[in-house]
Image (cartoon, rainbow, N blue to C red; front, side, top):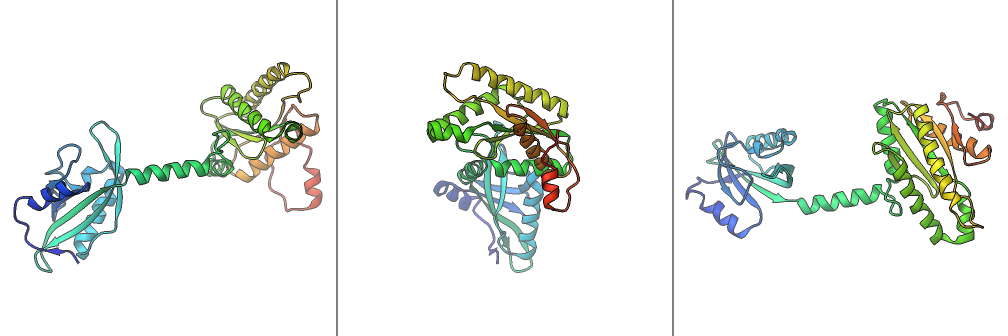
Length: 305
């Protein structure tokens, strides 16, 4: 149930709240207009509607929460919203609304409390980024890559996918150790950043396999981008010390389409084809309708170019 009292004292309660709490307290009338304020808010809050404090896309949820609290005479569930500060930045708060009534049938308005959740939102963002990021290279990981690929497929967005697989990487690890292998991956990630465009989406999806999503790119444009990668790797290989393994990669290309699994499968087959033809090559495989699984289908689809 809500609070039942007749507010008097010209904001003494809210001013007291502001002095002892880091939270922000507001009083609003039955129409949602703010009448009193305890705490600091950007801009002039008194006289505005409660929902006008929120950024535009959050205003409906505040309006609905207030209407529900006043209609049912009970405290609202916590509502997360962003407030726009004077400098243009956003601050995140959780809003709770307690209706104030004079008897069971006479609503006077509500007492609202805003509690900062900026630290919680920061931790959530960091946790989300960690869950979606490869810690070694800083690229997005396979989970994020699959989600992005599925999103583009849902939009039927044009573009191309390149899978870049470092050649003989496992042999390099055995010969030089995993620490050297990690340094090689980090160096390659840096090279990939340098030779790709800002709108390309880079992911590390397996140990030595990287993915480049190229929005809006045609297969011919993707082939040119892949050629830039192989040319840059060739320059690195020229500078390698005698006895070092060649620093090359096999690249598989496929167009994006409405079926993300089909696009990924086509790019994987294109990488297989590039390696089968001697590594350090670029393979292309068109997207084909997904067949019913048979062993013969698997072997018949290995070669595509």
